[in-house]
Length: 144
Image (cartoon, rainbow, N blue to C red; front, side, top):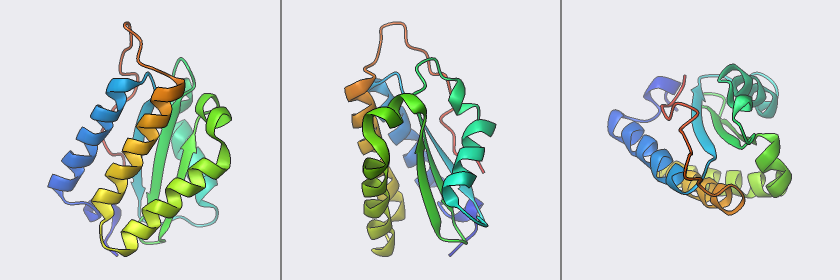
């Protein structure tokens, strides 16, 4: 498995950013992707640290979602801030992760994340619909 910066090629990275932009058109929620090389220990704890470092907990409605992947450790976590997590819970996040893993194994990693982003966007839109005065509170770029 390749390192974090090369896990997705440039075209795939642009496709993921466009998927985030499209998903966020229907919600006040925010979606980010973070790629790391290694995760030692719990991927959830690592994702929570990145979540705070990216200031995702500072959105006005507490509705940020982080998709965290440690490429060489082969670990993935999806962390939702308290506003969205209260609505969806651990079972939802785990079902999305299971779907991503299945698609990764079928060698469709970019498509897997696009589907993941779309599903997160649908759920965010259900509970946090786009408001007329909404602003993009977080950068849509992939962080490393």
